[in-house]
Length: 179
Image 1 (tube, rainbow, N blue to C red):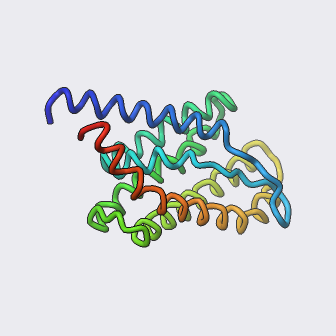
Image 2 (image 1 turned 90 degrees about the vertical axis):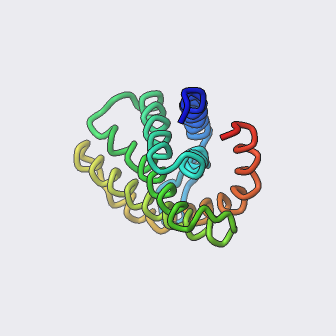
């Protein structure tokens, strides 16, 4: 790969990381049925786009950088910061590998399978981060456990929305960045 393409890739991934931070900041938290709150966010979309265009390593990098910066801006550096960065990193890696596994298919039902799988893994990683955070900072995990079903449902709905929108926007993004 030539130097110009490498520079373009780095710049696009930096912009996608910045989009992640912005979308994460404007995420909406709502009271959930059966207790707790759920975060409704589309911040995973830039991570998925990076993974689909540049592969799992770059997708993971966008997830890591975006989530890390978002954590620093919102909460500062703490004992469990890297655990909170893990889900977004995993989303990029898993989506990149699934996109390759399904032969770069842009059919919505294939993308739906890929995004739902990655969403369930992200939900599991977030739940793990919540559990460890509760143990480290000594607060009750029970409320988070009760909200697990709500987080799974919201994650699946968001994943399906991503699967619908990605085939529409991805060709335009590729055309703009010319990679």
